[in-house]
Length: 201
Image (tube, rainbow, N blue to C red; front, side, top):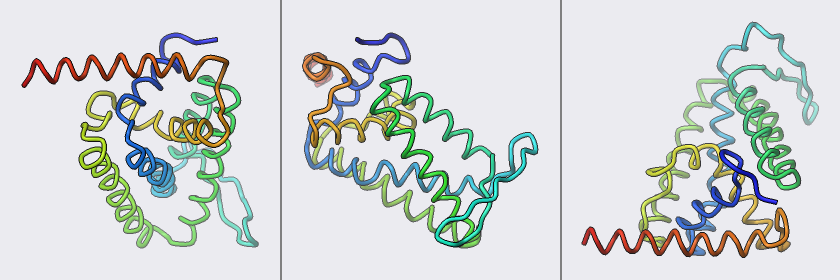
């Protein structure tokens, strides 16, 4: 059953889908979206804890490091809860991915230290964002959705590429009829865009 407002998955996914029809562009996004999230968390490791919360001592691969309850942790919680609200099953998987990204990015940040970490993040972000703009400009031939909806670009994109992968690989639907409804809305969005382009030209 569909939800409304901020949690209207049909509306959000149709908006996303209207900007991502080309298979090469979709593949580029699947490759680059999660690394953007991961490296943003990696850099956030060096921000101070919220409200002086204590560090959590953690061990990974025999190495000890601290999980810091800072802005990266807060972002992980917000993303995770939002994804679960969009769809419990796919959202729970996306939330797990977010937590894994937070833990592993913290581990990597503790190994690299800030002097190296910021350079790694800068290169990764430049490569990933450039790849996505190329995907839109060369293959999709439509400006990226972030120019229309920043919320979609920065918060929903990781969930969308995961949901799309689940649909392609396993035929997953949040509920019966979801894909057909979204496809009809995508067609409507694209037709509106083409009409607007005709008027402009």
